[in-house]
Length: 118
Image (cartoon, rainbow, N blue to C red; front, side):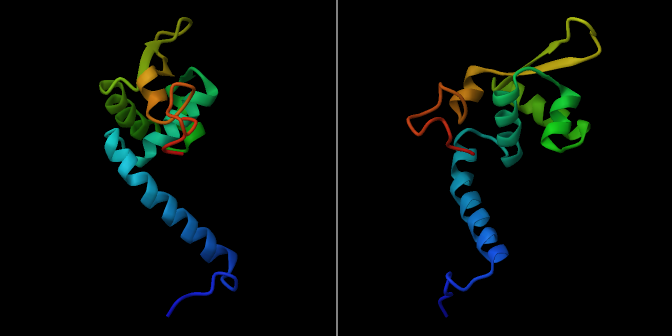
């Protein structure tokens, strides 16, 4: 039975849109060897600039230990860099690098405005 979208409740429509967006994004994540959570991290870094690991975890809404694992993988792929804070060597500052911008963010992205993932 085909659903009539004109009569569907808003939460159902939003769920369908989110599902379709996820289905569209999965091949792009695979193309860049990224997990879905990485998109939020790269987007936040692109918009906010250099952030401490804790600031980034707070903005993205994940725990610092989970952020550490995600950042390690993205750093290995060259999407981000981690450097010690100039004022406090205990703190790492995280910055997006060109490969992170090219895979979906910033001016270095593709003709679609660099918004493949988000």
